Length: 484
Image (cartoon, rainbow, N blue to C red):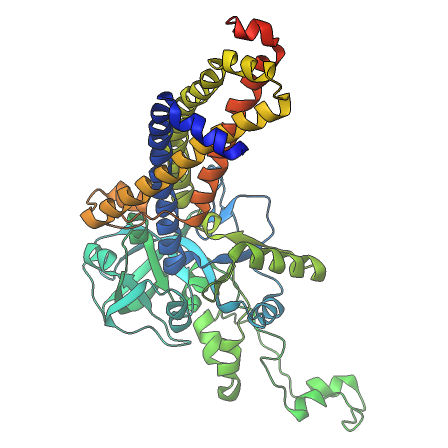
């Protein structure tokens, strides 16, 4: 009965059509705007996650703002020394035992000048020291077009085609890295083993150089640390001071020693140290390297990143490990954060415009009820209770707004369909970075639809409470006489 009266009242009023059309237009704009911004967010995230950040990273706890590029705080006049992930072995073992995690890889980060071996075409770059094959297995956006990844323990570098072209090098060429440390310089060289392309190129990617971790540690002066079980001591060595070796005098240990007039000091490079490891232990030592600034984590398809990050954080707190997790955006640092804030600014602008429209919509709903004061007074005069009148007005508003919401969502989905069908290709570098793709692709998801219906229901309630309360305060006699 109540629904029938409300529906009849809505249909009989001419103002209903205007209100429905106005709300539908506002909902359509909001639907399309949300679809665009959500699609850009998803595009950038997919591109960054599959290119270099992973789903999230594990980094040492630090008071400074830190990304995969290092210290992200303003220049302080001194070089920030990056800490390493400790205990690396236990952390990797714990993470890789989780069913949600697809794989992990360590990374050493640093900034350096990269140039050809003849000193030409110098360019500033970020060097990422990673295990080549393992890294590429996680970064699905990287596709090798020439050469192959450097092998485990091999010196080498991989360049994207844009950097290779800028430096004028190709597979087999030698490039060198230069890092300044006060008045001193560290220079290391490596052969280019592969040239690759990113699935969706972003200008920031042209500043990455993927290098073997041995070279990067040596370049940055980072001491190589191996796991405790990397070296297997012989029985003779472990039993050196056992009771089976009877030394009558401690000086017997140095019986064969002789005096020298001078001292000879040699400093082995890290590569020479690796070479001096016994053959049977060399592979173990390389595979058990624990000196990494970051640990990049990729999840299996369909996993909720936020839930997994919370689970991992609880694991770290439980074990008291001095590390923390950071999502892909913070792993990418300012390169992704400024895009995030640009989208936020655009979104706020759209919300302000639409908010003004919804205020007008709300006023229309309010006026729609206030203009019916005489009708409400007549209903009360013939015995209608306040609750009955209030419910009828609320149902009428819900019919108006929900109808508008359905029409608005359908119109929004139709608009996004035509946008996708138009296949708008972007050529501007900034827009490609903003959308995370070189073509605009937008979709209306269920979360946006739910938010829109919550919004229109809120409009119905806001446009009902105030005017009904005021209308019901007027006595039936005054209402019939035309009181407002």
